[in-house]
Image (tube, rainbow, N blue to C red; front, side, top):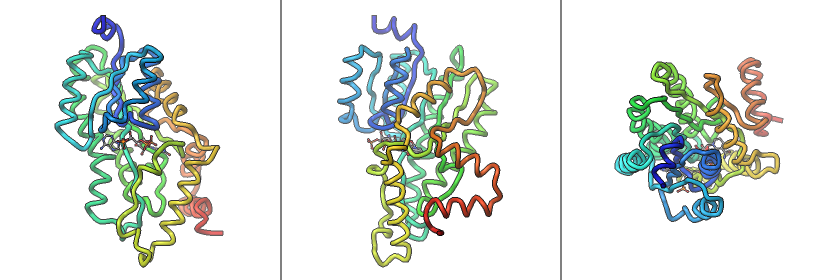
Length: 289
Ligand SMILES: NC(=O)c1ccc[n+]([C@@H]2O[C@H](COP(=O)([O-])OP(=O)(O)OC[C@H]3O[C@@H](n4cnc5c(N)ncnc54)[C@H](OP(=O)(O)O)[C@@H]3O)[C@@H](O)[C@H]2O)c1
């Protein structure tokens, strides 16, 4: 009975499903007929998603997957293919942010940021690609980028770099994969009301009040905190909705923004001179009166 259902359904895999965007996306895909594998690095955090799954009678299964760990990625994908027989949609969502001026960031901290936000995506995608390429109907890969992949801000240089890198990666891959019927989607959210500020970290040296960047780091971190918790920030459900619409759309569009803030920044960058755009960001961050 269980396997018969899977055969009829499309199969989706979401990374970082324990909270925020990943949590809402896994549930929305399941509510819309996908047999969904909600992966998370710590399955002790699966209580809420499993409760909703049971209550709503969804086809959703939790599987352990840490995007930093080759073995858990391989084991999870092997298990998913054994059960689901195919993977139609992969949502690369897992990520976090590190705050700190470049001078305050250690190479290890920057590498750790890239390990999750960039190499983690590569690790999971390289494991899934042969499956999508060899199955009838191809598939869709959704990378969760950020408006921060289009515009850099101070104290988030490491995070911004991972999201800028993801722009190039997703764009290049879209050409490579189209002939195999595999579609790339890059989601660029603005401020989204999630756990991200709690899961984000501060560079060790940035904690030192003697750092020349101390007050600027605190200021920017407080600004981001207030923006993510602002009543006008989009809820994670809004990102999930755009992901579902993008997956179902017939257009081969690569980028989808979420939130008025994201659209405004991306449009401004397109239309303004570099100097005007930089001044706009300084004003936004109150680095300039
Ligand atoms: N919130 C925003 O304003 C915003 C804006 C633009 C882009 N984004 C992007 O959206 C994505 C999701 O973030 P969110 O806002 O939903 O934040 P969140 O609520 O903190 O969720 C982040 C998820 O990533 C998981 N994760 C972190 N490292 C992992 C690893 N090594 N392996 C597997 N899972 C891992 C976390 O798991 P644990 O629970 O175990 O920590 C959690 O499930 C991120 O890529 C983020 O950069 C967020």
